[in-house]
Image (cartoon, rainbow, N blue to C red):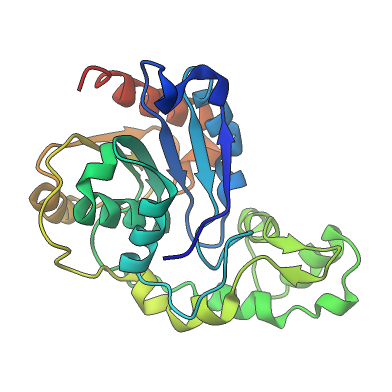
Length: 262
């Protein structure tokens, strides 16, 4: 287990220190950091304590030689106490599912954003190679970095997302690219049996324009999360919290608030 870098929002609203709403942990996806969810987290923190974390090998959290979901679940378990609500997106959604399956006492309600407990075949290794290809010593501004990255990554939105993890001033990526590249099969995969089912409510929230949660994925979801519910954000793709932040916030809030008396 590693101690994750964390930011708490809305501590003055009580959260696990006496408020009527349980505290909430928000877990980002691959190549991200806790600040990717900052805007949504701050709005959710209007009436509860919200904690965002940087996952291992991301942001300000420690670098490790491994990047397994079992390890990430242990990291998350160490970042919260029992009875928290948990939201996880993409890689973070798989880590949140692993947490719920292996340490169910930690999780009151679970929101999994646009991912399923299945293996995917869309390796992101090409993005790691693109980031490694940048000559960071020649980059003085973020515009320089964007222009250099454009030689390898066509989509402006993807470049903008990746560049959030570049510290231009220090000339380094806030990502452990070596470990993430080596562990890519594990990241896009799913570890299989993790020791049971999660018997509390879980919301699988997808972008309506995304293909990450297919009809075929509903069988393993239902088997592992028998109280699963499904919802989709119209007009959103995989990065639903960035594309439709207000709608994503509302869906999360409605689901969590419906279980205040759980």
